[in-house]
Length: 376
Ligand code: GLU
Image (cartoon, rainbow, N blue to C red; front, side, top):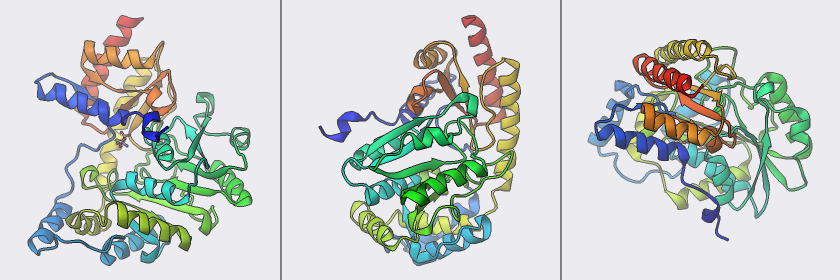
C-alpha cells in the first residue's frame, strides 16, 4: 500500500484553513488553531529580502543554502544557543518541516522504527511513513506532565529502532523536558547507536525554566539537530529551517535529498534569514509571556485540567467526551477554532494556540467558558 493511503492531510493546517475561510465570509471566528505568531515579520528582515530582490538575487543558489546564510546560522547557533556547527554541517531547507523530512529520509530504510512521544506534532507520523519508516508511538502520561519515563522508552526499543525523535519545548503541550530526561534519552541512544532527531523549533519561546538542547548530550555522529526561524522570528511563511549534523555521511545524504527535492529554498528568504540571525526577538517573547499569563488565568478559573506550558505557545487541556466533537461544537456554536488532541495522538484533549492577541485570547476564552458551562 502506498504510504499516502495511511496518512491524512495536516490537521493543524486543515482546521486553520477552515477558520480562515469562515473569517473571510465575515464570521467572527477566534482562531486558536495554527501555531503561528501573529506579529508581522520584523521590518529589518523584510527589508533585506526586498533589497535582495532589487539587487537581482533571484536565481538558484547552492542547494544547501548560500554560504553567507550558513555562516550566519553557524554563528547564531554558537553565540545564542551554545550549539556548535560549522557552515558545512548545515543544510537550509523549506522550514523545519522539510528539515525533518530530509532527516527521516536520510536515515530510514524500509520499516526502520522511529520512537516518538505522544502527544506529538501532527506531521511526525506522516513524515516517517512517507520515508517508508515505521513510527513507534510512546504514549506519555498526563500525570507525568507528558514526560516519558525510562520504562516507557526502553519497552518500545527493538532491534529495528533507528531513531528517537525529541521535541522540547513541546508541541502541543508546551512542556519542556528536564535535564535528567534528556540525558536519559541521550544515554539510551548513545549506548545502542540510535540516532536522535531533535526538533528544537520552540527553543527561544521559554517562559519558565530553561531549554536544554540535545546538542552535547547525544554523540555527535548520532545527532541531527533541527531548527527554524518560523516561530522565533515570526517567519512562518518564509519557510526557512535547517538541519545540522556532524555525521558527514548523513549530511551528504541530506544535501542530496535537498538538491533533488527542491534545489535551494527561496533565494530572497535566505537573505532575510541572515538578518533574522542578528535580530533580537525578546519583545515577541515578552508578549507571548503576557499572553500565556492571560490564558492560564482563564484556564485556572474554569478549572481546566492541563500541564502548565513552560514554552512554545500552546495550552493542551483535558475535555469530557470526544475531543473532535468538542472542537466541532465549539466552532459551530461559539466560533472558536481549536485543534483536537486526536490530531496529536492524544484523544481526550484539545490544543489552543495562544500566538494571538490578548484581546482575542480574552474573547476566545470567554466564549470557551460559556461553552463549558453549557456542557456541564
Ligand atoms: N507547527 C504549527 C502547528 O502545530 C504550524 C502548523 C503545522 O505545520 O502543523 O500548528
